[in-house]
Amino acid sequence: MKCKSRKGMMGIGALIIFIAIILIAAVAASVLITTGGSLQQKALITGSQTEEAIASGIEAMTVVASDASANSSTPHALTDFRVMVRLQSGSQGINLNNTILTVDTERESRSMTYGSNISSDSPVGTSTTYAVYYVQKGANNEPGYLNRGDVAKIIFHIDPQIGENQLVRIKMIPRVGTYTQIEFYTPDSMTQQSVALWPS
Image 1: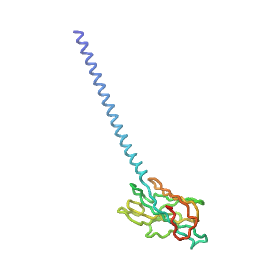
Image 2 (image 1 turned 45 degrees about the vertical axis):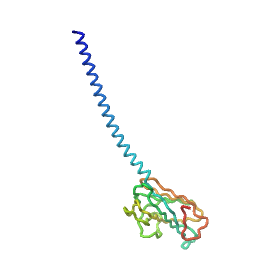
Image 3 (image 1 turned 135 degrees about the horizontal axis):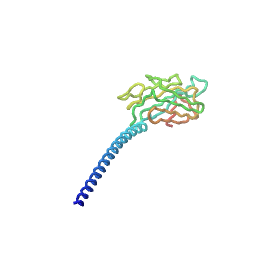
Image 4 (image 1 turned 180 degrees about the horizontal axis):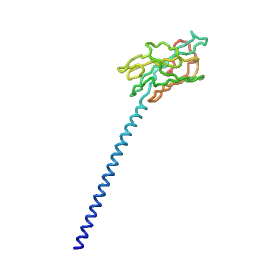
C-alpha cells in the first residue's frame, strides 16, 4: 500500500511540474509574439520611411542659360539659368519650400531657397531665391510643390556672371529624398544668347 501511495504522489508531482512547464512556455511564447509584432511594426515604418527617402527626388532634364553680353561689359557671360525638372519615377510629391538649390562655381558657392511661381520663363532678378515656372501641370498640381505629372523650370539668377570654360555644379536638395546633382563645363565659345549646357 505504501508503494502505491508513493507512486501516486510522484505522479501528481510530475503532473504539477509538467503543467508549470506548459504555463512558462505559454508566457514566453506570448512575450515573443508581442515583441515580434512590435518589431515588425517598427520595421515596416522604418522600411516605408527608407523607401520614401530613396525613391523621392527631382529628375533634371535640361539646363539652359542666357548670355548676358548685351547687358554686361563681360562678353558671353551667363547669368540667368533654367533647369527643367520633374519627379523621379515613383517619387512622392516634393515641397519646394523645403528644397534648397546650390550653385558652385570656381569663384563662389551660393545657396538659394524657393521664392515664387511665375507665369512665364522670363529671367528673375534675385540671386538669393529661385522661381518656378510650370511648363506642364499634372492632375495634382499645387503651387510651391512638384507633383506627379508636373514639368517645371527652376529659374535663377547668378551674380557674378559665369564665363566660358568654367565648371558649374548645381544641386537640388529636398528635405526628404535624394539630392540631384548636375555638373558641367560652360562651352569654350559661347556665341548665342541662349546656351544649352546640360546634357552635353
